[in-house]
Amino acid sequence: MKLNKNLLLTLFFTLAFGNINAQSWNYNNNRIAISFDGNSAPDHQYKWPIGDPDDWGATAASMAIIARLGLQDKLVHCSYNNFIDAPVGPDSENQNKLSCDGAIIRWHFDASKFYDVTTQLEEAKTNLASEMLKSTADDPLYFIHAGLSEFVYQAVKKAIDMGGLEVLSHVKLVSHSGFNENETRRDWHHTWSDIQELCGNRIQYHKIKDQNACTKPNVLWCSGKDFSPWYWMRDHQDESIRWLYRRAQAHDTGKADISDAGMLFWLLTGDENGSPDKFRNFIGDGIPDAVKGISVIKGLDENNKFTLSAMDDFPILTIPGYAPPYKDKYRKAMAIDAVHYKNVFAASKVQLTAPKGLYNITISTLGEIDGESTYRLKVNGVELGQTQNKETEKDYKIDNFTFKNVRLEEVNDIQVEFNSHSNGKIPEDDAFAFSRGRWTQLKFHCVEKEVEQEIKGTIISIEGEHFDLHGHWKFADDKKASGGRYIQYIGKNHYQEVVKKEICDAYFMVEEPGRYTVKWMMRQPDNAEGDKSNDAWIDFPGAKYYGNKEELSGYVKFHGRGKGEFTLNGQLDLHDKGQPWMTVDFPAAGQYMIKIGGRSEFLQIDKVVLYKDITFDQLKTLME
Image (cartoon, rainbow, N blue to C red; front, side):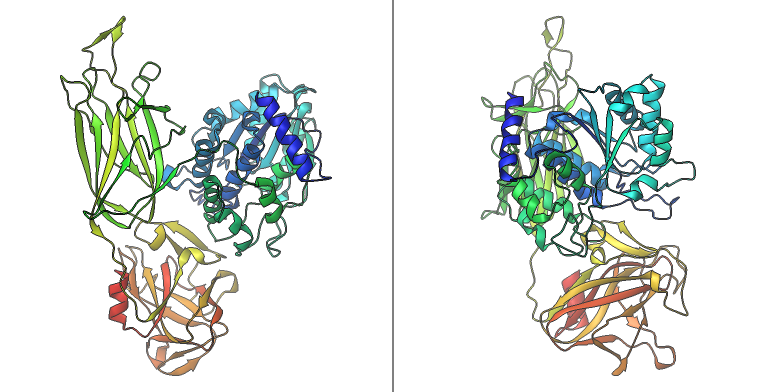
């Protein structure tokens, strides 16, 4: 049945793409392996601490290409974060894991084929080597080289050590990047040429054109800071494609870049000149059999409450690391099959859109006489706590537990985890019975709604994550920052001059012309002395700016002071002319640019704020 479906899809795409071959390099429903880099956790032993963030969206897009053709069972290996010796990061900030897990959940991939190299190096190498060893002339392995070469080198070496040198001639490697082939993050790491030498040039190799053309938004797979060519994903009828757009938005520097996906697109369609429009035509109505109902929208009733039903609002999902749940229709509950999954957790999740605010969230569970199941609640990847059913002498007695003062944003991932458990009291066959972790609903009570205050003036907020970073500027994550992210300058102090390579910039729109006051949300490290780590060079090219009503030009020193929390402040330091506030005059509506140069090491900037027609105190109140 699966084969017929694949053949039908292949025929469909042959017709849809006209003269384009359905596949390249003699690909014929063969096994596919792929390895991405793109580590999220900073690697401070390397000159560029953060990995290549184009993989975060490209990983999801690559899975979409496979799923669109119904070839999920052909993906036999997918490793990610493949920078060897790079540190491990928390799952909630692991961007490649978020992309892989999201694809597994939505498009029915086999979770056992996915490996985070930072935590599963040996397992990942063994799996890839084993797949290489299976290769024959009739069953070649197609490998998509979407990361650096050291991990691949180690997998090839393991395959050779397992006696598989000769079969490597049936491995076909696809590349598009000289950087991936030749870059090393440690002195002892290996390159693609080292791999070829190791295997005696047995691995077959094909390199397509570089899939980046970031200055040409409608060509290939990168459109720079212009997301408009990809708005079709944002507005798609298929929720999983809208999720794909959000994964592309995760890019650290705000680029629309999913360039590594171009290799699979070439392999499976024969076209190495992909583009946003071609990808849109390829995706069409969406991914066949994509999970439905993963998103819900709720409003508050007259008592500031709403409910999520386990039966109606939570889909049955395969979530990596958890057993699959099922729905007990008789008891209207979500549950885990204790016959097959004992003493393990199942999970289900939903993406909730609701009014922002502070909530008490109550879970209703069903007690069972044969065990006391445990329940955990996660919001946006963060575990809020857990509760365990009380012992009971009556099956399916309702038990409620409330997680208090939970902050919800407009859109939230809500995940409920529940396990099977035996108390050893109810004999069953030659052992004891287990409870099934049944739960029926989550009740949300908004105890403090976030009220949007009326703003009579005009405020322009330029978030740190919207800057295009260069030199020694980097992104960092912190829940205290707006949007959970800020930028930090980690280079040397440049008090006397502006260093061109240490300048970051951002574009912003001005809809109401006029004169604006400039402030920022900034922070110094806790160990910074006095006025250390508290200033930067600032410039608004194309606009006039002033201090003490005197027109200024070029870069000027801008400084503030604050520790612990990001603080709203900021003023000029003109030395002999004092420390006035900075104002900028935008003569017409349109797009403008701000440039910030590194001046003081370890300065942290959450955002830059421009405002007019309100007071500074009013601005502070609005931003609290």
